[in-house]
Length: 185
Image (spheres, rainbow, N blue to C red):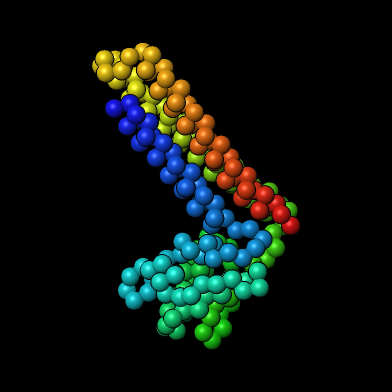
């Protein structure tokens, strides 16, 4: 049972790191990336739909995102969704495409984004530590029930700590890469 506990806990920790990575992809840097608009949901055809199901999204010239709807009737719905969103970009609507110009980041904005990244990294670390605590509680419960000896408990706890340290290091690595990307001029 204890190896199952460790395996399940490690899987949850891996997912926490993956979620952090996806969250950080949406953070706007000085360069254009389609991940900035990936999370946008557009009200079209009477139901909410992801933008990538309504239009082709591409990066043009490194500093501009081009959204080309497959149906021109949803052009205004996409524009409305962009304006409502928190991405902070103003859409320029041509006859059949929407262009989002990505302005270069100011030094102040870069520092603010780095603070947001550090906050999100700390949330991920806390989540991983909570998973470790829950697994440790389960292991101690197994020892109390007699299905795990004290030596086995000690070995499992050491293994749990190694797993935790590995995934906290992964969080730091993912965050540092995004921070480097933001601070790059």
